[in-house]
Image 1 (cartoon, rainbow, N blue to C red):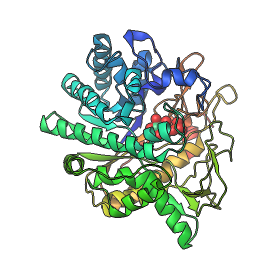
Image 2 (cartoon, helix red, strand yellow; image 1 turned 180 degrees about the horizontal axis):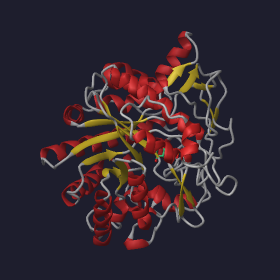
Image 3 (cartoon, helix red, strand yellow; image 1 turned 30 degrees about the vertical axis):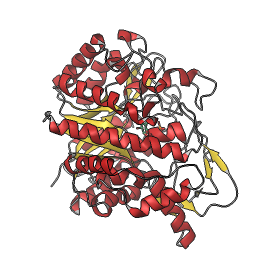
Image 4 (cartoon, rainbow, N blue to C red; image 1 turned 90 degrees about the vertical axis):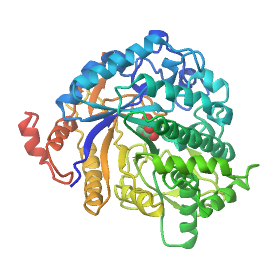
Length: 481
Ligand code: BGP
């Protein structure tokens, strides 16, 4: 029986703060967040001060049964000014950081790009320009050769979501809104960057394992009408399959290419992968060590109508998000499915859909890591000194049940990383949306346990993920009833 390794996840820019420390260079978010054009305005400083408080966060990790921890090395700290000039101070910092983590017995899983292209790279066109891929490879190679203390590497976090932020949601430069042509162009370049990184890692026989955390949140038809089914196929092809296919099977299916080009008729683009690129993509899919899945929710869709509505919920006010685009699909609510305050459907069965795509639809038999999954909520220690985050606990347990069932049926899910380790800001929702296993008071940077911290410790002692914990007994045990 597989004993799933339990861990938590972070992303450097969301938690480190210290934006000026050790000669850091700006990344794509620095100026954007403070700009009027931004869809979310807040100050990325001080975040959770992870850059200086990591010792405390690792100690909590150790104390509460965390075995593996996702962190990222920010490219803009290591190469602040350009592709080749290394910032020694930052390099030394991350050696100290990893040393400390390893001393606590926690295994790092290190991401090379977590939505944080350096500003100099953005000015050259970011991943929208194919010519820039080599800069990323240079950084990746540098990290593999320098940080030999690392075993688990992740190439690029959520290739599709980073492209969405720039080309669909207008959250990052060039602030395109629903520009699907550019979206595919950037995503394709990032798939190539990912694939070349995997090949370089393997050809140089660097120690360890390499994988890719993919954001896959499926679309389901709201009913059995053929129009709803075709809307969901279109949504899945555009948002999920277009990058999940190349990273798992090493190919793009005819069905997906057809659905993409159908949508691209509305733009001046044709999606046509090149032969030489396909060889690279295929090779990487064959030799990659594991596939990461970031799963949060499932969306229900139906046939679009003439109405155009597109709104991202950045406040946590239920019912704010809207998506209805005449040439795409329409997002609808499904009766009986609960949502978070940010309108994300709580639907653990969606995780089984994603695993089925990877293992069966794309016949990828690599181990699977759930590299992100979690529950965002509004929490305030001023109102409730002890955060009893039962909704978060239920959310995690329900996803654990699905994972256990999948593994019992023969799937090979080896790691689970809860988003997030401690509270940190959310890209387009600021500091209000908290995911942490540990609470952070952003005014004084103090850390506090939540009920989920104690629950997690109990979970870490169990052999099966579907064993339950009695919350009343737990509250009594920790003296918080
Ligand atoms: C994933 C990102 C994370 C994190 C998470 C929660 O897409 O990889 O960095 O932010 O989503 O999303 P949000 O902060 O938008 O609620």
